[in-house]
Image 1 (cartoon, rainbow, N blue to C red):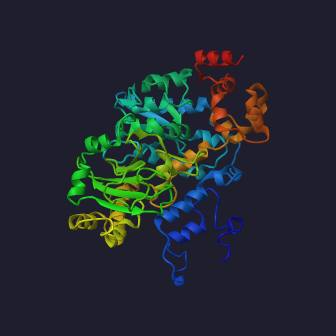
Image 2: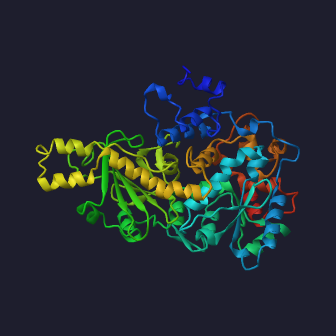
Length: 518
């Protein structure tokens, strides 16, 4: 094959299947160790490199016009409206023990099915539900959502399985439980009226017994909502979280040689130099990795001038949750916890700023990433000019370990915690991250089919109704609409399109939004 750099030809010859990394031959061959060819003498690609390729293939941003809806899978009746959705939820609740009903919630993929996506093409979405719930869990065990229907488009969770029944604080605002924190921050979470909807709401003791998976994920996995769900104070400092919640004494570990460090000038996601550092979590099993990033022209904008007393321009923390999944925190130069970073790069974001947790999860889809240390060898070779004494040289050798030892530590941490958690959850241990994949697809511009699915109607029915909806949606006749623009008119569109159903958005909300448009 002599066209490895020709993306179009790779697609034409079936080496790449857009939006399907698992089925793409190029990924399969890398996973088997066949690419580059064994007799080429070239080293095997790393897990991180395979993840990069898989993430590219699965990212809808890079494949405009390509969609699983293009496959011939639409049948008559491929639509689940809100009546059917609430009927299924209410029926499942009634089959449950009365004492369990207040803890049961439902996550639906029926908007994707109604948009025309084939059932077998929803596997990445199903994986995203499982991973989302476990990466937002504070329990020490892995739990899997349970499919309610034979098509596996509606899933039931028990809040207690993920400690989601406990109160949650999001940016200073308190919520009764994690589900309410997500629902009340989700612009697509709408309270419905009607027999089935009200029965479900009464049994589950919530106004929002069901949410669509991608809508829910787009709120729960980013920013301060994400921090609140995993128990991080978004108004706090990273150092306080490390010392108090993880029980780690950073300086003590450094003094005793219990930490591991590596520094690199060749980070793929940081604009400047980067130092990474490892510690054992003291209050339970697990590990913490910190990445210290430097600002250009900052107080110390390179990693070689002082291997001990550097001043970071920002920090990313990766720590294992009690169940082995990874948690992520971003802090600024003053150690304040923030939602995104202007030092870390994420080209999937419009502003290129990495945002927690989806940017981090996308990069660390298969686990922790090894770094080849440049600081230790340089500092030891230049100990005299750096004015390092014997004790400092010994400390340097203890902390800045060899490339082999560092790579082994990274691999051991990934396999002992994160990879094991993925396996226990029934998730693939290689390839693109399903959560960030769904997030990026959801955040992209919407087609007519996408909008129809979210509104619970077929694409043809939505096309026929566009004259009755907000004029901003008329562009769907020939093109796409920005996700934020659709969100802005979602509720009034929903009110218009569900007026013939038994279960409709509550009248007061519809009256309010429709009157505001007049």
